[in-house]
Image (cartoon, rainbow, N blue to C red; front, side, top):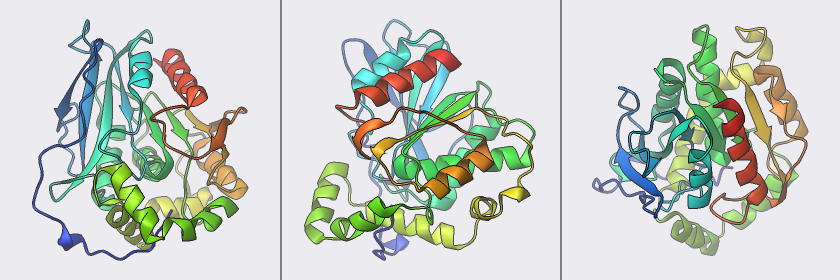
Length: 291
């Protein structure tokens, strides 16, 4: 959702080290990674996590895309990641994080779209991909561009939670925007994120969207798509109170031939760091089915 706060890109601070936390528990080992299967992204880096008894990560990777907030503590819980790694056939979990001009948490949409498209088009071991909230826009664009320009994307399957599309917001988003624009709320958001780059990420994403990118043109004119049926299984899962309008859901179905889960996550659209058992169970089940 757009907060409409104009902050210039060149106002970024000096470069910082890779900052998103590593998941070090009794069962998990994690490390920062700056490449994906031989590809070096420009706008992303990763926290790669494996089970300590499978340090090589033998098996299929799962790629987790953050939401728009991309908090330094991570957008997914340790319990969820442990559960995914215990699914048969899953070897590693790669949490993608935004980084632009050396600033962890700052998402620069043109680079992110290029990165995600490359991951979806050129992975040697096709991953399962999970996306959420504001990051789902970037993931959907990358998936669609990969399918539009080659016969078969190198993604095994995708699950998107709380899909968000500009121009397809429902009443909940329109009512919440004034609340998010309050200075006191912006301070709380910065504390939650652990970085001050959410508003810049939003501005750059809107700027990319306003250039009429190919993803937007296909959303507005889905008959221009290059396939009869989307070549990757895509599932949508929503909260009971979520951001996408019924028209937006119809448009996603037109483009991606999505399966929409009949059950909804109780409560409102929110982070998956804690207290979202239905979402975690659905993600783990997705890994078991598709690995």
